[in-house]
Length: 159
Image (tube, rainbow, N blue to C red):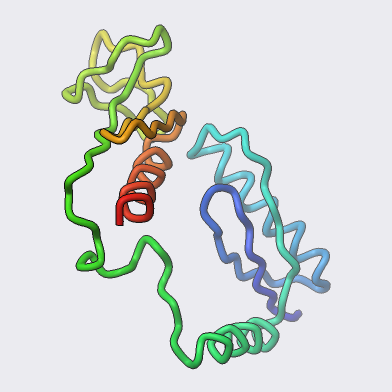
């Protein structure tokens, strides 16, 4: 049975190696795996986006074409770029967590990755916000996504 590599995008892209008889079966299996994992660990409402299934040889050829297009230099993902390129910290965008009623959740309160409270008496984290000193703001249910938006804003808009 051939092995396919399928890219599945929820919020982050997941590369899922799947053994399947056809590319269509590989795509369906990759979507099933990620959807089951997402249901267990995350509270996302974004739809799952499944790319075309590629054999390992097709995947390698595609990567080689991208590298040739970049003159042999592979561009690292944004989250893994060196810190020395980060802008000077003249702008700040702190993240704050909030309860469902809009009140601020103190930083001392601990939560699971989905926002369920681990601190007694806390109703749980419903959403997180980040507001920059320049006036930019973002609000998301996922704390990690808020942090990523905040980091990208500070790196690009103030870089």
